[in-house]
Image 1 (cartoon, one colour):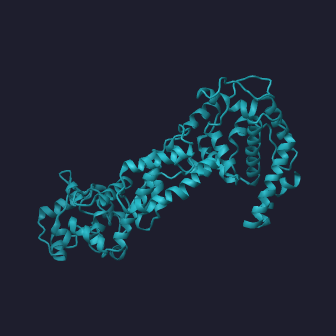
Image 2 (image 1 turned 135 degrees about the vertical axis):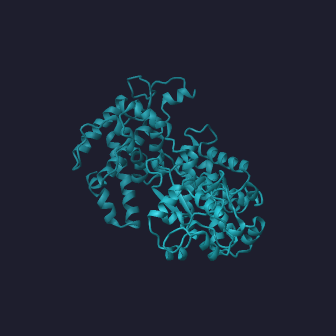
Image 3 (image 1 turned 45 degrees about the vertical axis):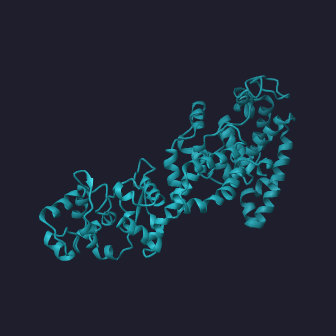
Length: 472
């Protein structure tokens, strides 16, 4: 049914996210889902997006956020992983739940403790059902940094911690564990000093030898011990705190710990984007390198370029049109000729007297009838009470301007609508007339005025569009 609707790219993504993916969320997050089923689902999504043809933009790009060059299409693998991890919150917040107690009995260690461990032995993992084993493996893919803040070090597990090893192996001393020694903070006294051998024996009723005491202390990373020795702690706050489960955001290589968040109070949406970022490895879209060969572009403004059409346009068709331009998949003859859809890569617009290669630049800017249109556009814009366009260069016509104020919103919208008008005129072999474009612009703004009046109030429309609307 939806294939017959001739939806835009953004419209198709909305259907995928809100209708298709939502139907699969519950069964996939309560049952173990085979990987081949997930891959088949992702393939169905892509086939729908591209009408069963070859992907014109890499799937790993389409699933990214808007500012990264994506359309936020659901990645089922990341979606399922992020939602399954919410079972960890349920286990910690409801430690007496019957399903959790069954798992505890299987492993011999409370599940809420096991999820905090970063070096669980394989023989323990094998005792878990595959569903929960996958949850732990998924958790460890995003929990990939070592604590360096004292409040986090105190809550690090002693046992089955990949950072705390003896003879390069994680340790688990069952008697110590069952007597209450589970976290690094449990080895400290009320002022933050390590408990002596005798103090450990008296407090936890264990038979701790000198060598056991030494091995445990030496197994803790030196940087952690140094932090604990030189920084004071509030032990009362430690023992009364709700024990966090930190995930470290190291997507930004310049600041590997720029964002640490507690899994127990984190929404699955944040986890979803972390899984997506790991999946796509932060590789930029392929269009960036091609544009940067053609124009001198500061790489820092790409998020603004990608985000602009979704901020200034309400229509998904205009959003998707500019998205196609940025990703260089606008169906001009050069692009169609490479794919053997047309027989010539030259401009086929009947009003064009210059039979040049019909690439994106020619199609939208340098084609003679189009060039005259942009001359009229600049003359019209410079006659308004806005910043003057001297000149309007090809790069800005195609990619737009970074948005800093309301004037930039108006300009970017006008440019996108103008390009779409040019595209439709060429597609249907109609003459390009600037006055006709202004009439279309006025009609679009009339619709925008009605929508704004109902949703935000008339003042919102006047603030952004009032001046240009009055001049049309």
